[in-house]
Length: 94
Image (tube, rainbow, N blue to C red; front, top):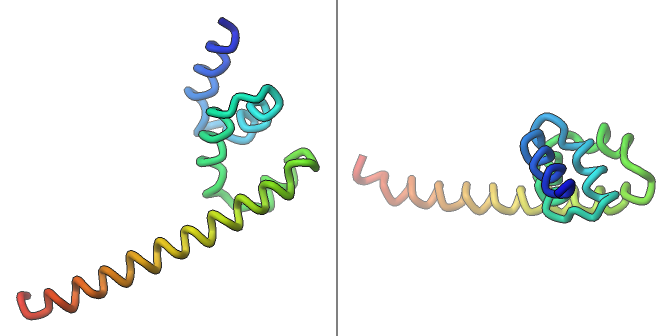
């Protein structure tokens, strides 16, 4: 019962306290909360997060952040390319 209450409270406040929830979820192995909090935090600047993380989590977070940045760049480039193609193909219709 306590686990369900913590999980519910965590999800309810995840946008307001993502870092605190992430650390709590890692400590207690709540993988769903780890994932959800990470999705909120990955969009934030890396330095303030890394400064607060326990030492053993710094390198995994840096890898995650770097991978996300590469993925985000790939997606943006891919979308921009297709928008350009659509714009060129529609040029005769506008």
